[in-house]
Structures are given as C-alpha cells and as structure tokens.
Image (cartoon, rainbow over all chains, first blue to last red; front, side, top):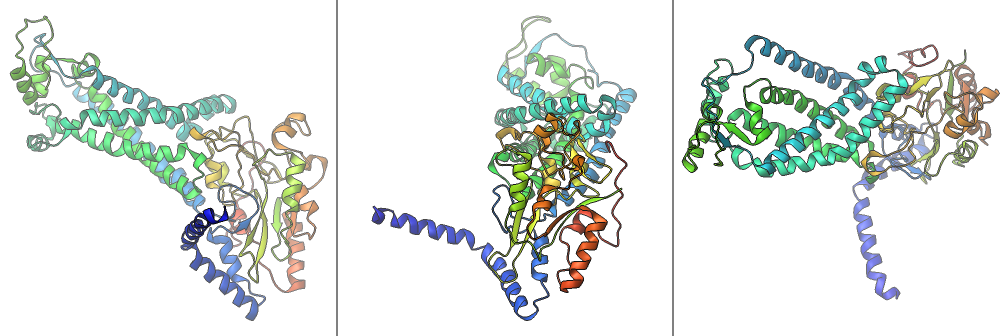
Length: 340
Length: 208
C-alpha cells in the first residue's frame, strides 16, 4: 500500500518545494538578518519591524484570507484612488457627457433624413441579433444604475433617502449587480460573435474619418453595414471596455476563491475606470440611437429600416441589399427581406 | 473624554492566543469569524515577535471612508463601530483596512458575504446598551458596564492593553525606560497617524 503511494508523496513534496521556492529567498534573507541582529545587536529588532509593514504573510493560527499579514498598505492606495481621482474625474466625465449631449440636442436637434421615407423596408437585424443587443442593453443599464448607486449614492442619494432606505436600496442594487453581471458578460460574448464580421474595418472608413462622420456638416457619409463610428463603439465599447469590466467584475464577484486584497483592490479600480468610461461613452450611443437621429431606433426595434434611411446612412450596404433583393414592393407594402 | 486605543507590546506577547479565545467566547462570534488574531513574525527564528491584532479604531478610519452605505460611526471615545442593519456585505472595508480587521461570516459566490463583523472594543453597537439585539449582533457591551475590552483584561503578560490612550502611553513609556528596548509601538502610526502629523480629532458623536 505504502509502495503504491510513495511516488505520489514524492511528487507532492516536489510540487510543494517548487511552490515555496519564490518565497524562500526573501523570507530566508529577512530571517537570517534577524538572527544575526539578535546575536550582535540584541536590542535592535529592526528586521521584525520591517516585516510588520512589509505585507508578507507570517505565522498565525487563524485561518482566512491573508490572516498572516499584520499590516497591508494597499488599502490606503485603493482608498485614495477610489475616493479621489476615480470618483472625481469619473463623475465629471459622466455629467459632462450628459450636458454635452443636451447642448448638442438643443443646438442642432436630431439628425433628420434629407429625403422622404419611401415606406419600403429593408431587413437590417434578425431576431437573434436584436435579442442579443437588447439583452446586452438592458443588463447594461441595470448594471450601470446599480453601480452608480453603489459608487455615488452615499453622496447623492443618502442625504435624500436617509440611512435605512438607502441601505435597502443599496443592498438590492448590490445583489442585482452581482447576479445580472454574468448575464451581461454572456450577452456580450454572443453579441461579439454575431457582429464581429461586419465591424471589421474597410477602406471606406477612411472617408468617414476624414469627414468626421458628417457630424458637424450634416453630410451623410457612405458606408457598408456599419460606419466607422459604429465600429469604434463596437471595438472600444463592447470588445474592449465591456470585456475588461466583465473580467474584473468576475474577479470581484467570486470572493469564494479567496483572492487576496491586492487582487480585489486592483480589480475594483480597473472595474471602476472601465465602467465609468463605457457608461460615459454609452450615453452618446444611446443618444444617437434614440432621440439624436430620425428613425435610428427602427432597425433595432423592428429589424427593418426605411429605404431612405438605409440609402442616406449606409449607402453601400443599401446598394448591396438592393442587388440581393431589389425593393420591388410598392410604398407601404411588404418588407423586403434582403439582408447583407 | 478618553480616547480608546489598543497597544500590543511585542516584547511581552507570548502568542498564547488567550485574547483570541476570550474574544470569541465573550461575544459568541460565529464560526469562521475571528475579531482578533495573533501573528508571529519569522516564527522559530531568534528574535521572533508575536503581535495580537484586531480593529485599531483608527483616527481616519479607511473602512468608514470607503463604506458605500456609510454604516460606520465613531463614539465619543473614538471607538469605530458599525450598524449591521445597514451593512450590505460589499467587502470594501476589508479591502481598505490595513489590519485585516473586518470579517465576514461567508465568502460566497456572487459576493454573498453576509454582514460584516469586527472588533467593537467591547462597546456593542447602535442598539440599546446590553439589549438582546445588541448582544446577538455585536457581542457584549463591556464599556457600558464600566469594563475594558476582555482580550486586554485577560492577557496573561499584559502585552495587550486597551483603554485611554494617555494612560496606555504612560504605561508603555515606563516599560521602555525600564527595559531599555522595544520602543516601537507597532500599528500606531498606521492607525492614528505619525507623531509629527497629529491624528485627526474624532468627530463629535453620532453618524459622521
């Protein structure tokens, strides 16, 4: 019996020794210095006091996350970052975007179609694409609101609500945030798979960049299924920031794996910066997709867009759609099912 | 008004864990929660030192600063307490605390931690003094009974002292003068600020 398991014991010893290797030199050096100091300078226990503040784990009988660490200094850094620049600049950026969009709407109003709607509809998004978009959008908004409550609520809502009511709101927000989070990540993954093909950059995007999307001139710049603005939002907002926020969120969401405090502090700062950025940018996306542009919401709402909208906003995509299935139906007739 | 603090004299602590046990027993804290622990630096090496650590009731408490629901408050005696009815179990106080004082009954998936628990300096919580609710949530309120924290009271070598900071400092100064070594009071600069930068005065009672 012992014969059978001796190899296993030896293997485990080897693994144990290997895992201890990175710790060994540092600890040994400190301990050796301490032993020497005790011999030659018994009243000088400096090596011990250095260890107290080092953040290294030492011996304790109490089991738990980093219980062997006497003093950790990362918490102060985390606190200073979170309560300082992250909240300040994040809050300013979010509010500035709201004000900017309100001013833009007041000054320029929504981007209107130049021509009249023909009533002929072109299929733009199938039901799976719309489902993944709205699953992502709804969970995003729930996460954004609950996250903002947990970050800024203490300063904004607490004085209004009082302690008891605000704590109830906050605990609901926390649990909603923690359970909806993984669903958001799932919808992001599905969304990326569905939309990555049409978001790869094309040569025509250079034109969009040169004309700044026609945002200021009011000109309609031709593009394929998605213009460069939409592509940027896809790569930056969905693929980039949402992934970063999602991964850091997963780290924070599962303390059962007993991550150390440094991991949690870092994940929290990454999560905060990423989410504040993506929330700020999302305001612009929500604006242009709803009140900021005539008929912009139709595609995602019904799956179909008007022929005029398609021609003005996505001319090349419209041309391809027409080639696949020309819009032969009369005005107000059946929708054209062409989709590229 | 006294300013309550803990001192752990590293020259005296013998790592008996009496404070840990006394605390657990006095307050009947749940399994897995330890309001106090003893850490031994370089265990087994000549010059090893043991130190008992719990909430130090900091002057500028990081837990209080990061709590999203502002459930912490400071008593007139500088003791940092919290309201478990408000706590949402986010774990932020644990990330911020330099001493690892905040404890959670669970570490569940989806951030389900339960209500935070920590050393109260044997001063209970916001409930009525010596009430059943107070005991169930925060343990015994010895300060209200005119007693000092039990961990320090039971310490067999009087390494751990808890009470008015001025009195503690006098005792410690006398010890250092007598023994001619071990002048360092570990944790005080972290908890109460450096001597050249005077600690912020505790806010006057109630929620802060």
